[in-house]
Amino acid sequence: MIREFAAEMEVRDGMNAAERLVKRVFDIVVSLLGLVLLSPLFAVISVMILRRSGGPVFFSQERIGYGGRPFHILKFRTMPPDFEADGVPRLSYRSDMELEPFGRFLREHHLDELPQLWNIFVGDMSFVGPRPERSYFIAQIMERNPDYEHIYRMRPGLTSMATLYNGYTDTMEKMLIRLQMDLEYLKKRSLWLDLKIMLTTANFILNGKKI
Image (cartoon, rainbow, N blue to C red; front, side, top):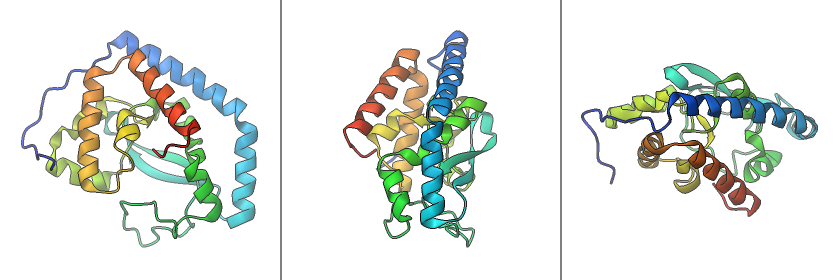
């Protein structure tokens, strides 16, 4: 069971200013290359979404990022256009009944996340960092552990240790576990650790392991 915290803890950033600059330059260069090289795949996926389900190609949703600032995360749309039409945020998005048929394929191969290369390029996100959350759920997390505010010291990431080893966060308990893992990452992060996380993520995806 996750212990609830009443007071904030001190968390030192494992990266110095120079390392954070290198990390940002890497993000810009690699995300730009990805956007250019994968543009034909972007076009194919976009056409397939339009042909199979109609509606918008991209899904955009407000998340809270670096410095506690909101931004709009981008994904290829895998859900029906009227999903969450009632305005109530939902914790789980993994029901096969809720996924568009082609959307299921995109989710299983993590292709729905590709538009986040744009988020990385413009500085909303990084390749490695805590997954961004919605303010609705952040408020619930901070009621249990106010140390979540340390997450704002990092750009949200496309992948993370928590993504790899905590799985899909479809419960509040898993959200709190993810928070502890993200705080540990903040304390220990380095360029070498980021590289290992990226290589592990690529290995998991290529070998069909669900993350």
